[in-house]
Length: 57
Image (tube, rainbow, N blue to C red; front, side, top):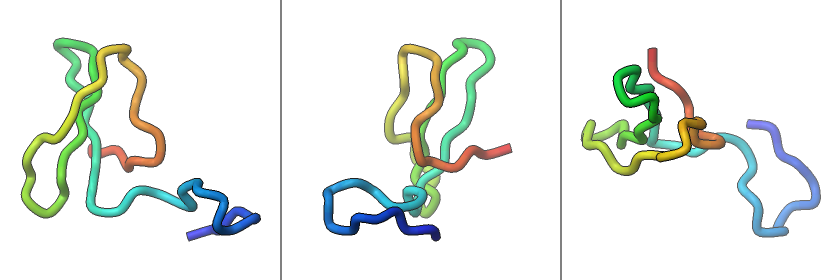
C-alpha cells in the first residue's frame, strides 16, 4: 500500500482490509460485506460507493 505523508494524522492510508462492496442494481445502492464471514454489514442510501473499500465483480 502507498502511504501518504504526514503519518499519524488520523487518516487512513490505503484500502480498508477485510471488507468488500457490491452494487445492488435493483435498489441502486452499495452494500458493504465482511470478506471473512460473507455477512452484509452496512448499506448506503445515496447511491455512491464506499470510499476505500474494494468492489466485488
